[in-house]
Length: 218
Image 1 (tube, helix red, strand yellow):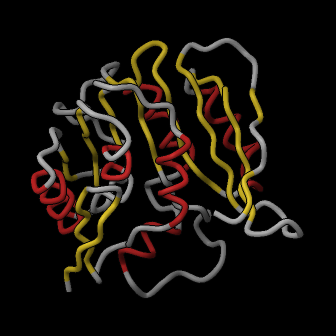
Image 2 (cartoon, helix red, strand yellow):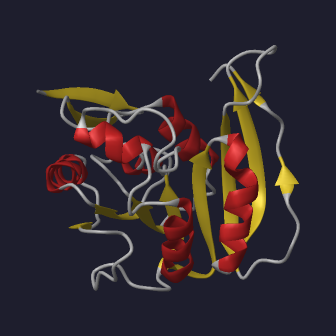
């Protein structure tokens, strides 16, 4: 079933068969550094749950994506078209080179990758949810490696993940030539621990990490 949501004046079509919009994607869209006219690529773009909120923030963006599931990619293309947005969504593995997604061509690469390594916890019976939550070919290492190839020099890679994987993430970022520059932790209440980390890295950046105030309850 297809339903329609409004995201800051833009339309986001959602499917009951695909991974749906979450507060994590919205938080990442708010967090990522974005400039008018940026060329953006979303790794594992799904139906556009990150691309559409990013488009709501700034004009003149080119919004590209790569998605393994053809049904999700088709709905993402429809979401771009119905909002009059420019961009290309390719179907395939993000580890492959796609001619329509130029290496070294992006101001911002973004990803909401699977949070759990293979074999860690229960796997959803829904194929779309399983792919979105549990690593297969889409891992932290592959996301960082692909982002490092797609970002232009000085370009940014923004992603969200569980805080317990930050050490693993920072190692993978640096191995891909991406220097962690901004970090923000999110928690659901003042007495709870952080359950989401937002990170932005810069290709060819100098060492120096800015830690933003913890965000609570969003």
